[in-house]
Image (tube, rainbow, N blue to C red; front, top):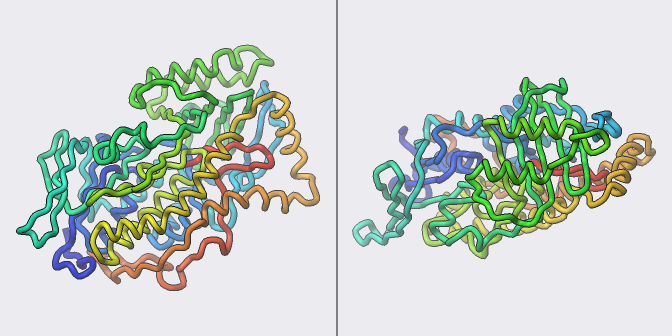
Length: 466
């Protein structure tokens, strides 16, 4: 690894272990390396996970992406969605709107496939960060070492690799965080179920969609098929309302059984739901990127203990219903790295990180609760009313005001934090400063456009992007 600028007044870079190589982990690794930390990322999967559904980059997250120097990469990999439409049981489009309105995106907001963003972040960091795939942490033991100037550290054991010591450990390993379990206890203590489940998977684009998403609703259930730019395949999404059943999140057979039970009989015959539903269930069974999980919040009194801290969904998952998970991961990584580089002990930095993030998280948790209830309708009457409102919206003289109102709540969540302007060394191991970074980049959310969540409350549009 190239020589690095020491953070704070240390004589050598601190070592940081990050668990999780999805979005939050590599984003944090990017910033920590630029601040002069030596970073290792460990990931349970044997290689980079490039699957997943489309995710939104909005508000403060757009500003962070620009400071990172990856905004242009995101724009090049944009899904470039054109329209969204609701369909009837026969698949006929009964209400069509522009995709930006469907997704409540404004200004520089964009949308990208989760796997594309993971690839961008990995490519930006792999030369300077140690990545260890196919391994996982098995224990964390904090040590105080009197012979190490009181610095101490965390002794880490792994499933496969040899034990190592790091100055800090970060759990960026998602809603089912292993680091959170090892440090704070069982997941059940921190999960609040929002009453619904969501599944996503790749499937053949048999409908010939071109940057379009189609939705179909029956009481308590919502289905979607879409195709994004540059992808010959399509993506399927199935959402259903349900109390929390007992199942292991690593048991896809059980998850498929729950999904099939929820949509049993839908679309089997005309007038009983979209005739594509059986095909969607078949595609879910065949997909090698099948995803299934509950819409749930992670709520914790503290995100850190000693020299271990949580980031992203591991700390404060707002569920796919919020449409803000990816943005919160990027923003949280920026804030945490900046506070660690600002000086003081780890616990001081973690306290500042929490103070910066708590209000932002609270706003988006509240939005997730609201949107989760609105993703599925209770009755066919409610569904017909939503379709009517969407059908007449393009012809309303005040449609622009309606569109603005639809995006307001989402904008509030996307911009519910004011980013500090943390100075970054001009060069760190060959990195040039990100374009646009500096005082002029000091974005104060709440001013300017900040975007949506894939949610259009007035029109009843669903939200599911993370």
